[in-house]
Image (tube, rainbow, N blue to C red; front, side):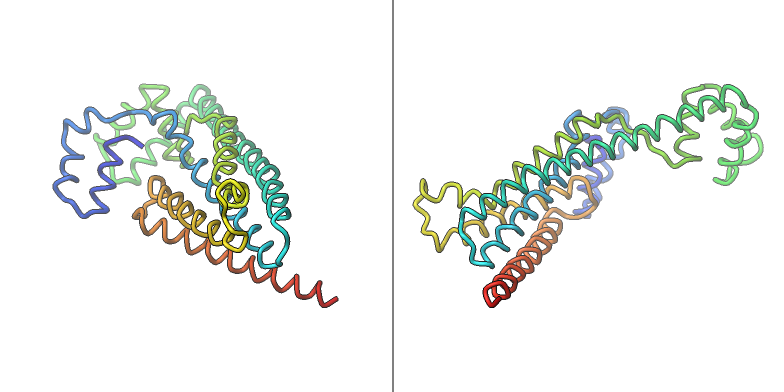
Length: 266
């Protein structure tokens, strides 16, 4: 997302008409960043990896506590989830991103071949696309002529207007790594109080309370970060994620408690 677009979205969310006008001045548009920052490409991968990591790990902690199992079980299952589920998410994102980019590449190659080999058919498609947008007569002829005079612009236009594909330059390896690292980092939070119990002198009966507080704060923070990639206010995104994480923890806790009672009774 360009800096100008980010400011425009923030202004819209605040209802700030003056800031909206500033984001649409000729000067602002002329100096707009044309490319995303490298790290910005993977923000979504990191946010969703972190959300999944902290929610699933906390669900495990809640389930084990609900079942009244030892702290050692929390650590074993928690780290097993971090390493296995995190790797699964990272690999899944890598494969998904790679498949999407491969698909985009094949479609671009096909459009390029059609432009080179059946230009009249492709030119007619451009004409029909812009005719449906309301262009006609000499204006339509001019639009078609301008677009088809530049091969790359022609192909870009077909990708977006005909196929609804907005191409993105992204590394599948970096996308997968961003997901995995964020999953591990956020997923460690619910385990911190159990890992540092002896160092911090936290009473055993308060470990879960500390885990709840740390997890709630982190879930809200990570959920708020979603506002950078979705059209939702930061506090609404944070509260929504906190609610989802809380419900997951409650369900996991009582499932563990119920299963423990059943197994104990048996």
